[in-house]
Length: 484
Ligand code: BG6
Image 1 (cartoon, helix red, strand yellow):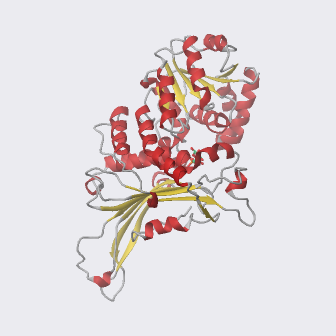
Image 2 (image 1 turned 135 degrees about the vertical axis):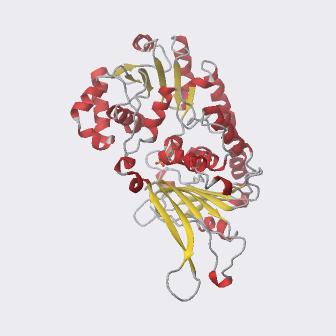
Image 3 (image 1 turned 180 degrees about the vertical axis):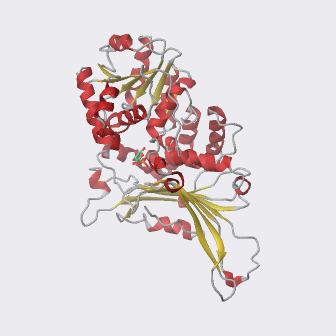
């Protein structure tokens, strides 16, 4: 497979929080990979902006280290790194004061696309937006990129949208959900709308239920205080799982353009029914023989925040009335796996009689790792002895089907940053989408607070609390087993 790389137009990219963790792990190594792929024109300029008193050389050393640590095999090519670093500079800046802004203004070229990446705490978004405006950097060619968390509830998300809207039009605001930049997440749309096979069956008449799982083996790491104030609902469900749900459930947009796609996603969120409390399972990982538990990890012995969440949802529209969607996500589980499983209904009548048993088509779309798709198909069990049926998978990993290049597919952040430069908002969340997601989330969290809900402890390295299994078993269904 030969991939086509189309260079983007020359640009200036300013990374506020340029010395932070996200810049080091994702943004800078990602930009370097795009450079190596030939997508970055010679005139591109990347400017780190942060409080540290560094000069250009000092920042280049920081970027070089970040590339060595996080850019994978390409980081062995010193000549490429040197060439990339020629495009990199640094401005020490005070987000809340005047220091550095005139210098930044003098470096940003008026006639090129310029993007400002807010890789900083949300409390600084307003200050930075204001200063960009005051220093004449918020013109029509400017774009801003905003990281999650986008608010912590509906009110704060509305306030944030209003703050940004003072100086930027919606078309200039790129709200990142890095799940939308994952190769296979976009493949959801390709599979649904590029094949005639699935769409006629993609509805309550043929689909028994849909499962969305995002399971992680890691715990909360060094982000204890952020996570403990967020929990799985705010950290994963309100954004990443909600986006997956939208892509899997939305109506076909008229075309693959930003507003057509986002209009359809918004309709899904607005059609979500309120969730019954007994359709929610919250969990918190317990300590194990050789690893501390959630409460120790976040240093809060009385924490009632969930590190696991399973939910049963309904979408009230013609397509999905009566088809449940089961979502689950959690940390310290037995495998890192993200997948969407569409379980189709039984055939309406079995010509093979009751002895043939119950057989169903199941389409599993694996987002990570080993991106690919499996479709369980019912066939005759080989050999004599009558008509016995078994289900076998038609199994495809993209790496097998498309060759090794597929394994080095562009990472989410690099793709999304290039989309910002191209001015394509399809894979970014619109303000009304984010607000609608919070409007659905808020009452659920308020219900937990009102009921003083206590998450169920669960074993590390397992599949989450027993109640999550029961959520399915009560309906005569089961989760697909977690496999890495
Ligand atoms: C982030 C969450 O948005 O997504 C993390 O804040 C989570 O808690 C991460 O670990 C998962 O992303 P990925 O790409 O590793 O699936």
